[in-house]
Image 1 (spheres, rainbow, N blue to C red):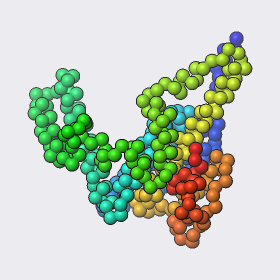
Image 2: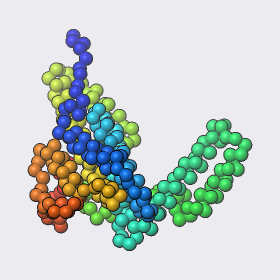
Image 3: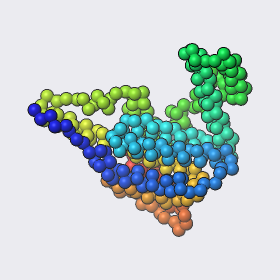
Length: 311
């Protein structure tokens, strides 16, 4: 019996076209965000947009690292964070003239989470016998301060006591309320099959343990597994790219070197990786003036902002 270990090339070696896309995105964002002097935000909305830009960039790099090493299931978990960033930004910018007010509320809710985290740590120290004599009194003060500062997020007649989100909407509701009709499809993809992965389901490991009775069956199972792995990786990669571009577009005012035409270059590369032709584009003369040839109908045939093929 041949005991020679099987050696598989990494996903980056097997699917170089896909990783040309991510390398292009990461290289550009490194120049725009890491190596460019970005003015300090002058508004709360500007602060939120800048923070979301950086968060999206960091998430994208992490997703890419996981995909390169065949950990698509872990990358799918991070892609959910990217998706929720998009939905929250859409909700903040839903009504013209109210963006600053909504950004303030979004920021306050994030501060609330920090306060609740501190409370949980103090309570944990008490339960595990690690608290000091002053911590019970400190916990009472913290709880009173939290209730006073963040009263707008309290729901005393419901469980839990605090709202689950800054706008009191679930991710599903945010997707349904989105002006982009693709968001509901995105939600179904990322919160259906991939939901088990987010809850640490061992499906990817179990899938590799499927054994056939004959060598022919083993070969068939391995080939089917490789095809499935590629499909999963492609979905995570393409959706993460779409959402990263959407976040950057919404926060483009906070990136001095941002150019909308770059988005379309990224999408052309993604179409190429999928082996399909991109829709025709109309390119203007000025920076950031690239447009789809029929922007009013873009949602009918394309996926969201940039026109990626629907995975």
